[in-house]
Length: 57
Image (tube, rainbow, N blue to C red):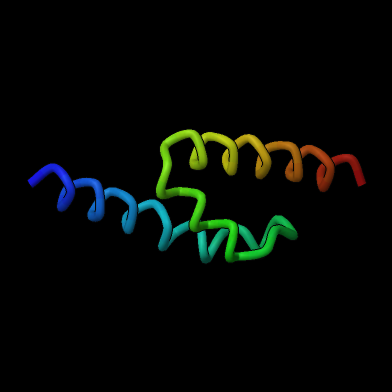
């Protein structure tokens, strides 16, 4: 039963990341890293770094 919840939560984070990552100049296939919770945090940090770079220009 726990595996089903893990799959559902992973899908709920991967799908939005597929749409968001290209806007930050990151390949959409990196969204697979959301399978692991630390991967999601790393992608959010990476998106934040890219956002600050885009704001400086």
